[in-house]
Structures are given as structure tokens and as C-alpha cells.
Length: 262
Image (cartoon, rainbow, N blue to C red; front, side, top):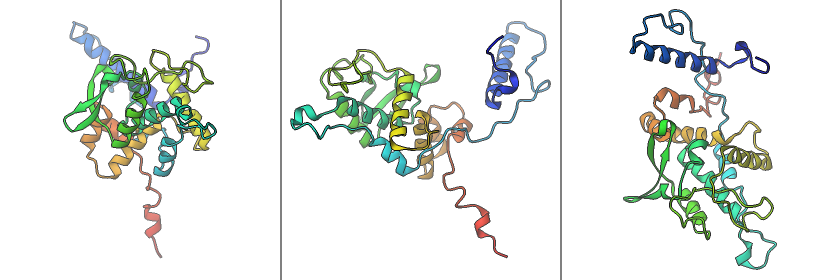
């Protein structure tokens, strides 16, 4: 079919994922009487190897802090403090904080509702709906709580518990001062938002919205979090998937090459 990539143009992870889907399909069919062979079984075809680390770029702690603080929340050129606030900046800081401190996927972020930000005992948490509609409760860091509270304090944002947690602004030029649309942001809108701040800060152009998830998991692992807790935090079904999201930021510095002496 025209415009369709050949098999040799697809990544190993894509091919492996498709083989897994085929194997699962034929295993399912056998429960309903199918007696033929499973053409995707490892006896017939070998799944290509996939590197442990994915290609997503992680952020250094310094660059992550710069990204979290990148959105401008006040216009110093305006004298009236009541008109100085930039609502879009407040939204963007809250949105980036949720991504950076909850390690949620962008698809999970856009599904969040106002009611999903709640209190659980002494914790402020997010109820995140992940893949397969699986729900998990994620405690939030104080910084994310404060930035979310500032966003929800904007008139009309936190009034309806069933409303989306993050809305697109009504017009690009007014920075949210003319209000926000009563619908959720799209995944593409969030991706472009992160891309815009990455470009403004002159960070690695390969940094994406998923980089915040990778950075959160990597930082938590470096600071002692158990892999099982990280798996639950990330919403992964398999801890091996969690490991692919964790980067070894200091791998080169700890290389055996530096201890050699002849």
C-alpha cells in the first residue's frame, strides 16, 4: 500500500510489540477451538532484541528545574497587580508540575478532572486513569499541590468537579485573560506546549513531554525508591517496563575506564 513503511523500516520495539499481539491473539483463539499453529510463536519467528533504555531523553536536575519555572505568571510591565497575572502561565506551571512530580503519561494528564485532585488522609493525591482504564492513586509533592491550587483558584477553573483539570485558552494572544474553553487539552496541545518551553530555554531538542516522566522515575530511583514502588507509581504492568524508563545519568562518570592505571 502506498505510503506504508516496509517491515525493515520499523523499529525493533514496534516489530516486537506486533509479534506479542499476534501471539496473544492466537492463544486467545485456542481457547475457542482453534487447533492450528501459532505463526508468531518463538518456535517459528524470533522477536528482535530491544535495548533496555528507550530513546526518550531525560533531563538533568538543573534543566528540569528550569523547565518547571519557565512559564511566566506575571507581566512586570503592567502596573495594576490585579491585571498583572498571566493565567496561562499559572496553568502551564501546574501542568508541568503534575507531569514532573506524578510521572503520569500525557494521555493520562488530559483525562484528569478537577475531582481527581483530592485529599486522602494527610496526603493530596491525583486519581490517575491509566492504560486499560486502570486507576491508581498518586501522592503529589508539595510544589505540585501549591501550583495546582493556584491554577484551580482562578475564577471558573475549579468550580465544576467534573470539568477537565486543564483547559485550552480561548485565544492564543490573550494568555487566558479572556478565559478558557470548557474542554480538555489535547495530547498534541500538551506536546506543543512542552516543545515551546524547551525551545525557549534552548534545551536538547530531543526533550519531549515524555522526558518529564523519565526524569521523575530516574530521579526517584537515584534517591532510593524501590523498583516495585516505582512500577506502581508509573502504572506499569511489568517492572521490566519501568526499568526501560530509568536512565543512568552518571554511567559515564562511573565507567571502569577511569579506575584503570598501568
